[in-house]
Image (cartoon, rainbow, N blue to C red; front, top):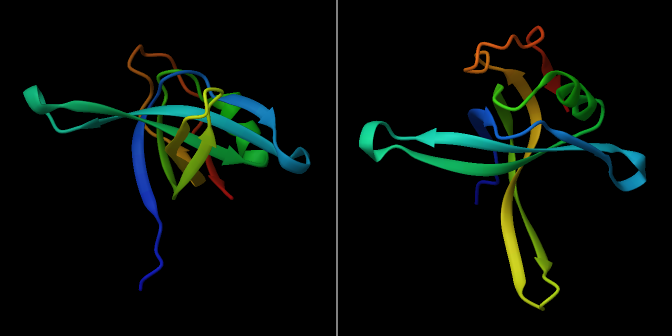
Length: 119
C-alpha cells in the first residue's frame, strides 16, 4: 500500500487567520479557506479548515487577511470529537507544511510581499 498524503490547494481566506497557543506553547494558526470548483452554472464553493504550526503560524497571521489568495501544501487529517449532546462528530482538516500568497484580494487591497513557509 502506498502511504502518500499530500495536497496542494488554492483559495481565498474567509476571515483573518486566528493565532493561539497549542500543545507545549507551540503557536497554531487556524484559517478557513474557500475553494472554487468548476465554472459557470456548475461552480461550487467548498470550505476547508486549515492549521499552520510554529513560527509560520505567526507569519501568516501577520500578513494574510480575509480575501487573501493563499496556496497551501500539506496533508489531510481527520479530527473527531464528541459534542455536549453526546453526538460523535468529525471533520477533515488541512495541516499545511508550506504556503505562499497567490493573487492579491479582489478588493484591490495590497498584500505584503509574497512569503513562503516551510514547516
